[in-house]
Picture 1 (cartoon, chains in turn green, blue):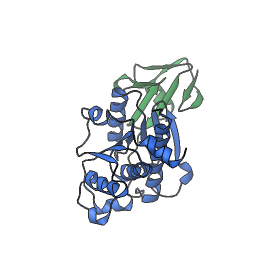
Picture 2 (cartoon, rainbow over the protein chains, first blue to last red):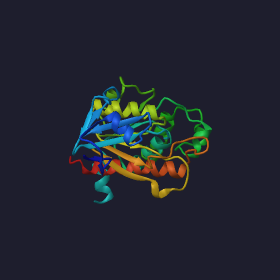
Picture 3 (cartoon, rainbow over the protein chains, first blue to last red):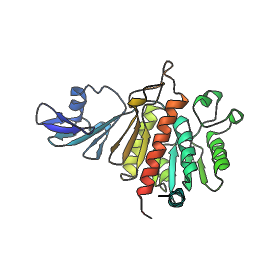
Picture 4 (cartoon, helix red, strand yellow):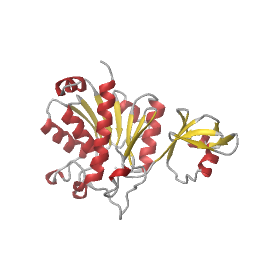
Length: 67
Length: 195
């Protein structure tokens, strides 16, 4: 399937992925993340149940210290 | 737009600054200089000598509350700007009240878990309110890595990779770049709001 991840088009295997699966596939191992699917905030407890499908716009912000 | 027109427009606007450290103090000063009418500045900490390598404070302000010192520095630039101080550690419970009246909020916290808490809280309380976050500004050089990107109402400034550590400290030039980039984004958002 084809999705947009952080404003870039990505080709991924399969028809659907949970957020947890996407993070694994993309090697996002960081703990502090803000994730939105089509503009909707996905909270940590919902990573296993929230699915990403063809055409979705996914935004992942990886929070790092400094400021 | 002339500067007078810009200043007149910004005079009616309110910006929230969450954290008055390297990002927040420099961003607030830039916004004060262009004439943003009201600033809500929040921090629970005091100025230390170690802050002076990047934060908009002076040696004789060491020991003062950061909000008090920043308010004074802004007053010295433009006494007409209304500065509202919030001298407490922001929480999920207090953030909606503190920043509810702001047109834009600047995320200028230090720690990643605090950034996460603020962003989550703001997105839940105010899904549409513009939030300008600073992400990745430690070290020196690598000017080309610093960028801006937007995701709905979240505006990201920084390189998104340089995390602070003992070997990669935050320093005035690069922190200032990101802080001023945040201020620049805020001005762009505010000028796009019609009165």
